[in-house]
Length: 80
Image (cartoon, rainbow, N blue to C red; front, top):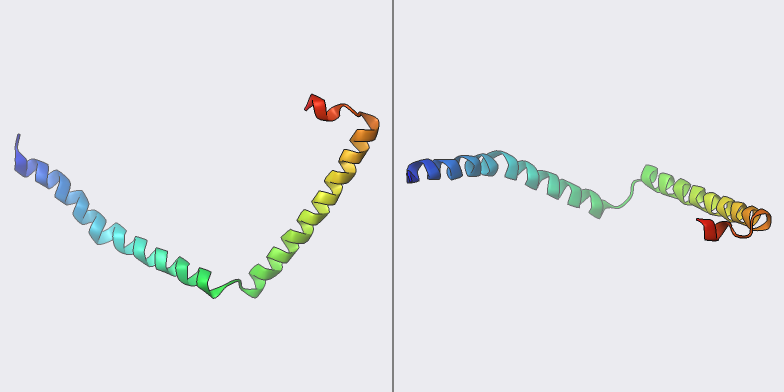
C-alpha cells in the first residue's frame, strides 16, 4: 500500500479542519458562552413572561376541557 497516498488522505482533511472548521467552532462556542453569562435581555425576559402567562392560560383551558369531557363522556380517558 502506498503510505504517501494514505498520509495525504489523512493530512488534507485534518489541515482543512484545523484551519477552517476549528477556528469557526471556537469563536461560535465562546460567543454563545458569553451570551449565556450575560443573562437575559429585557426583550427576552418580556417574551419569557409572556410565554409563562400563555402556558398558564393553556393549562386552565385544558382543565376546563377535561372537566367538560368528564361530565359528557366519563370514559374518555380510558379510550385514549
